[in-house]
Image (cartoon, rainbow, N blue to C red; front, top):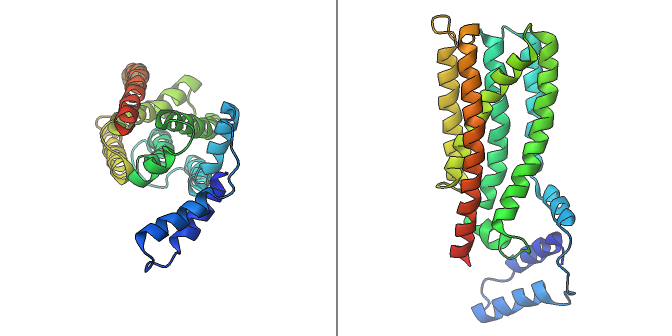
Length: 253
């Protein structure tokens, strides 16, 4: 039975008269779900990946499209928000917005109702989370690469500087979001991630003012060190998340 067929039958089952006795209601739901359902093989992993693409929220894809338009507009226009180091600030804080869109999609898996549905499928929660993270990260990476290539033509910076300024806050945001996933889920995870982004944005905004100015050549080494630390810590935290999901499945089974 396809996922769309299950959803259709569940919707049909939900319209059953609430006055029916509970036993009869459950019997009717069972008939709707399992009547004339052919046996289905496990299927290939590639087919599983394609199925997950179909589950991606279209609003997330729309948000990613709007992000690239916003990013290109801000980098092309300049002097829009009138702050010190405006272009570099946008370059630093626009990429983490892509991550917020990803967290919104991943957060759905952690909802209790979604967990019950996901456990009725062929693949584990761990694999679902990792595959969706990979797919969304791939899309985000392509968009970010397009944006950074555009930036290279607009501002007088070396490519290494653009990459460091553009990826460092994103890497730190990714690290902290993976950490949050160990404790928070669903709407809580989404709101905590938004709060984290707001704090990070304020820190970078404060550091970018003319008195501190974290975008100088002298401070560039600190950016590089922070990026390298963030990458190493993110890899470590991703492994922790995988182990956490394994334990989560054991408890749910």
